[in-house]
Amino acid sequence: MSTTYGDWLRQQREATGLTQQQLADVAVMTRSHIAHIEAGRRVPSKEDARRLDRALNTGDVLSSFLPQHDMPVEDYFEAARQLEQQATVIREFGPTYVPGILQTRRYATAVLSVSYPPRSEEECDKLVVTRLERAKILDDPVTPVVWALLDEAVLRRPIGGTEVMTEQLMHIVRLTEDKRVRVHVMPYGVGAYHALGGMLTLMWFEDQPPVAYSEGLQLGKLHDSPAIVERLQGAYHLALSDALPLQESLALLRTTAKDYGHHD
Image 1 (cartoon, rainbow, N blue to C red):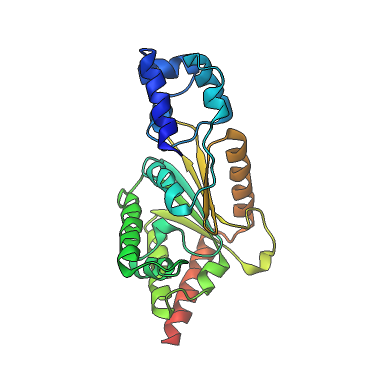
Image 2: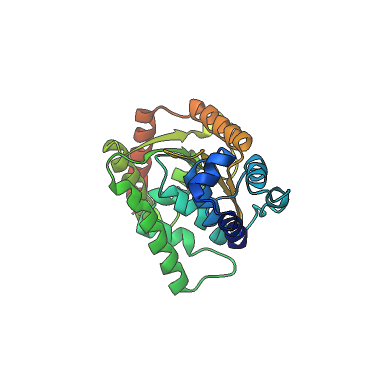
């Protein structure tokens, strides 16, 4: 989201003498939602923008000039990253590789070292550190509640080599055995299924509406339109119903890790 948009909203609010809470009350929104918009971490839905326009008597400015959602992943993911740190529930879908908060250092290095244009070693190191910092949300034994749905392709593609994959898969097994995350694998035999496509993260919060973040090649989108978020949630949960149960998923992770070990 453009910082200019958030700054403009804050300036208009302050010009009317309203606090964030007062504006939230008039616009029928939460104060934290207003704060995230002003800080550039969220894009208001069209309906939210219309309510803000009415509350601030700004005509249709806020609803007419909503920021564009399509941006390079590195730029746009910053808003999703900050929301990730505040989420109470996170649902991850990895169709091609392990979601970021579940990655080990060596797996993350292997993923992030492949890019176009190429990254320098220093740039790659910085991104790896950021990814590992994100994973610290799992240090809390309870919150957020994290589920991960992984396509079987994630287990089979030897990113970083067999040793890295063994370490990565057993890391997920340990997190699951410790009841810190819940993981389900979508087996090849299912064929086509709901949500098949790009990476998807669903997030829920204590005091604000849920959001979704989807990612494709060189593009990322943060979705907070209630209708879109609901559709993405539906696709995720339908896909989850076709995946292997928890214990079968763990067994497949362990077996695959053992197979990689035999390649050494």
